[in-house]
Amino acid sequence: MINRRSTLKSMVLGAVSALAIAAVGMPSAQAENKELKIGFVGVTSGPAAAWGTSNVRSMQTRAAWLNEKGGVKIGDDTYNINIVTFDDQKDPKRAIAGMEKMAQEGIHYVVGPNVDDGAAAVRPVAEANGIIYFPYAFPKALYQKPASNAVLGMIANYQSGPAIYKYLKENKGVKTIAFVAANESDPLSQRDSGVEAAKALGLEIVAQNDTYQNDTRDFTPVLTPIVGLKPDLLVLSGVAPANAPLLIRAARELGYEGLISTETAQDAKVLEEGAGEYANGFISVGGASTPEIASDEMKEFVARYTKMFGEYNDESNTKVYALEYILDTLKANPAAINDVAEFKKTMDTFSAPNPFLKGDAKLSYVGSTSFGQKRQLAVPMVVNEYKDGAFQTLFVGSVD
Picture (cartoon, rainbow, N blue to C red):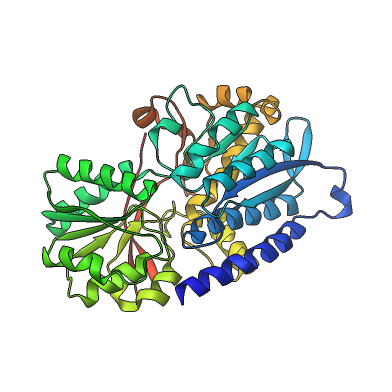
């Protein structure tokens, strides 16, 4: 059922994307605006489709909104924003092809890819063609010197994992922890980072070598030995949105009564459809906003997104930021429109009002502690707990 839903969502995405881009079209009074193409290369089909779909829809919603308001003023010119998308199907080779397409169209700013392999694979193309890209992938090498063209678009697992484990240790009495991961580079890397964080906190690791193939649909054999160890916390490292409910359901049906968490963002509707009440209490990294801190503009974004696509994904609270950062950095230095070296120079001192949070919150680039240079978007670290079809905020943190 979940695979079918994911497939249907990916099938309609192209049509919806075309409609959304058409909606970005301008009245004749704005016909003289220039066009600014912003790219997306990432996964919008298969088990991880929710990650990239959230990116694309966030970009299209915000672009349509800005264009409706008359376009974006950058220097002496006003631009209509055109979102150009490419589904890499979570395949590094297709990600390379997608980035090459962006280069051929003269696009200098690209959001994605969504996974580690894709983000690493496109690096040579991006650097050779003067493209700044915003992956949702965690390898530090992408953001540390000599690399300089990738900017992390979200909170990394090695930033959120320690915060989650510490919170659960202090507030839920967690003492023992087990990890399970898909046998792929992304989740295995996230598992290794989680193991290091758990050790640093003094948690007892009872399992860390259990893996599964990403196309697994019966997780009972994988989880049976882990459930028998009765860990206080079961971590689903790097779990894809389509697999999370299957793992949760299998663990609960085997009698597991402890906590379950992940450092990857999830889709509440997929959890509801695939796991139902079994998913209650599931902890994951959420979108970078909560009702308590969301501004009126953020609330309007959610309303527009929902109207455009018929549903909303909490992860878009994070994904809305990439396009905003690109445009506001270009406003701060219009020379960066065709020169990414100017963009990179601007990042070190960039600051702008954050339209999506209440108060005087600012947009800025961070990452000095994790990467030794500012190659990360400053978005709030929101950790959610799932309950009865929706996410509830567990706590909010930040990184520097």
